[in-house]
Length: 181
Image (cartoon, rainbow, N blue to C red):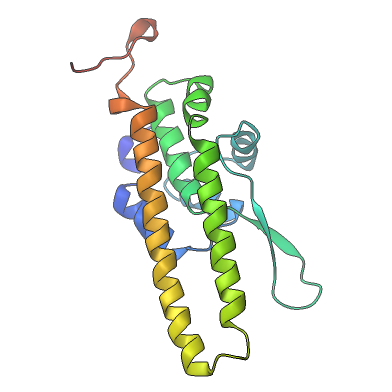
């Protein structure tokens, strides 16, 4: 797997800005397959089952009897990209799983808490007690807050990655890693 095919930091930021409310598994898989990176629906589900990726949130479609769909936080793309990088460096899925589980629960809790907070604000803003101008102004402020929150989560995930995988040192024979001291 070529490093060039993996998502760059600007790519990740662009995706996160384009999908602040999250993506479906099909959208995530398409992002990687469009770069000729292998990611099947079965692999995606396996990563979720292993706890490497968060579970989806069910989001109802607008309109009556339209059902719901599973939405994953946009940070899922970043997480898969990290998994792909580590696997290209010969880390096993078990090693990656142990590392990701260090702070995963806390990061997921922060993301879930922010989602609930923003949903609550959206409900309140839509109330008739606010005039149209106020709703629009508050809606813009809320979108800015979402962008800021997404940036914060991005930074937390980056810190988690560096703490869990200092230097992401290349693997050598025998399972050791090369590090600069």
